[in-house]
Image (tube, rainbow, N blue to C red; front, side):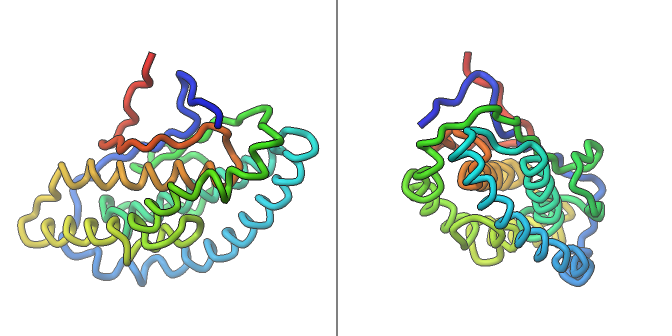
Length: 219
């Protein structure tokens, strides 16, 4: 397993948006139907691209850059939709229909292009090495990772997000500590998803990095 260097291969950041409606969350499921339709097809493409990337890495030790950028875009899009809805309910700004970085949106994701990747690791990291993380992610998101996580209704993330938005509805305050925890849990799931999608050789840490900003990397 490759060690994580000083620079983090996956950057997940978010901001608690203000003001935040007390009741809009009740209809966000309906408002997001167009996104769900698009994401359904994007995640099919994500799977196909990952299979193609698997063979590209196996034979060339590289993840083709256009394919990498596409899958990064799908994960960005999914993170914005999740943050708007069941994984946080922490913004009322409608997610853009975009694969790009969208730096002004309160939920952001960046993945460093890895250059060369291990040909040996590509054979085992997405199933064998990631099994411990899959167990954690199944508890957090109610799935084993992948396209289901942004529908995190059944997992711990969905439950905590529901508690946070109910607190907002009845007290007009979104608990800051709960927000920091939710971002940390989503960060964990996204790191595992990136690793399982073969986009990095850096093994995800078993560490809950809470808060909207990524912690400073260890020297």
